[in-house]
Length: 74
Image 1 (cartoon, rainbow, N blue to C red):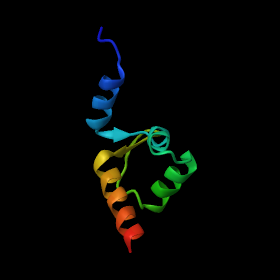
Image 2: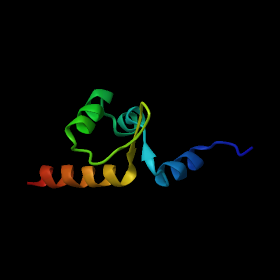
Image 3: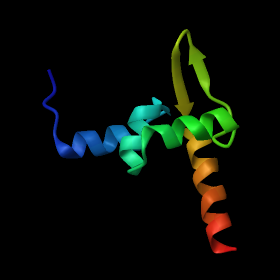
């Protein structure tokens, strides 16, 4: 078994392919309701749904963040 260290967690986060909405909210310092509202409005782009589970692909998060930084700069 590999010991979990802060460095291993940082690497795992950098290589992440998708996020559960609550994980994304926690990582970004947002309220979970904010992430769920962005998903519902379509602002976060396409999400994966597996039964009742939702996963937000990292690519969608990247595009969403880029659009937010563009909007903030304007």
